[in-house]
Image (tube, rainbow, N blue to C red; front, top):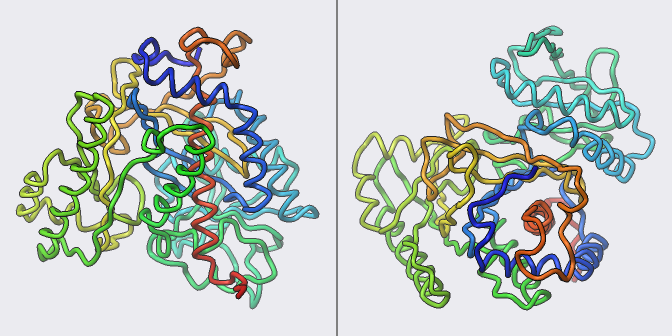
Length: 433
């Protein structure tokens, strides 16, 4: 069974949920028309928060790890989506090279790569894993938990192509988010399909640009459904030229936090919401939940006077310094799994939702970042009973509280925003006057 939420029998979320379910034909047509104009990212995952009165994405990853957390029941969906994606990009594809992160010692991450290899093998491709890590100098077999093994091979670069010894792929799948920048070995590969493109990496990408695109998408979608876009869109602002280490720009950050909290208080008052608003301060680039802080009042930024806290906030993955900061409306999560706070993460390939899981954290609160050490993962189950399907036209609350369709809609909106974002940052885009 899909886990019931503690909000399953209350009013506001059911009103929003019912509006989405009743509008299913219009929504699906709207998405179809959008995908005629825009190209979806090759794959993506979206972190979603369900506050009962609000349902919104808080992060979108274009190099998703965690594929190993999807259940076997979800694999056929992923394989079908992989087939559709490859057919669209390179119908004659035979060989696929997966380029992972350079972390060879994380068994969970390597299990994720092994799962991707399985998915694309079942999609009918020869799949091998080419590491660009300087530590991998020969084929290296690594044993994983549960008896699995994975083989990493050193990637070889010729003048125009990337491959392995005796393996020449036409398609390269990056599962490396390029936080430290695109290495030269991946540049100027004009004869092969590189997915996602280099400008999807965190050396170029910015969360503020993504949520700017998402704001545009949510306004158009809100108009389609006749709802306030705020119900699906977190308010945000951006601060540039912050230097946590030197303590510079923190006054500017406090002003931005205060401005966001003021906007959210106004909305809470409009909807009669009694909760205390909060904001999340996070690095404008990067993943792994690093450089993230929850604040309920701008005065709480005083903690940044502590040198240790500044150091923690000032550096993200691969030791990259933080200079640009996103200040985002905090969205509560009222979902629970085994008495731990949880949030759904939805996985997509091409334009299709293929599965997901709950990220849960027993030591975190409903207003805190759950992407942190100690997090656990519980797959979203697909119940076999047809009664679990959302019923179009049923009164609010009458349909079984399977929220997977609703999560999928919000995740696809974020994926569409990522599509807009990649078009805007594409260095090779054709310019029309």
